[in-house]
Length: 140
Image (cartoon, rainbow, N blue to C red; front, side):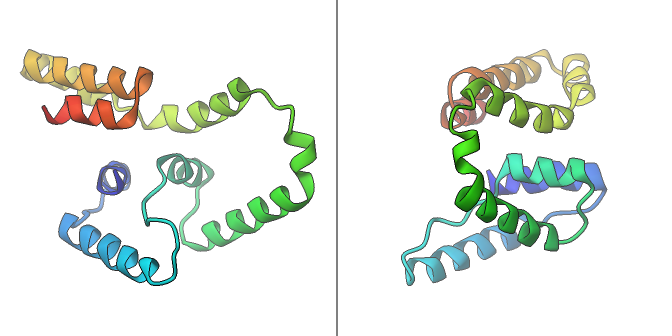
């Protein structure tokens, strides 16, 4: 998932992502994290989408975002207690919708119908069922 997110943003920003370096970085961080009982290292697609749409250029945006989340969790959480899940989902969808590449799907349709069907099956599998099942559909 982390490499897929990296490649998506690399395509949008016109730079290359080395999958081997990405896997090495994630592996080293997971080894280091296992020594301190932290969560598994991964990339967040929705957080990356929010940063991209906001125009963030450096990792400082993550520090600012973490600080804002900390303040929100500590002091503002009672205000968000009754927020419906639908509203929260809408916020994430609004941030991620711009990352869907319609032209790539159209090119797949023109080049190879079977690849287009696989693309649509995996897309709708992720959208309506779950990420692991959608990715399994894409791989198979």
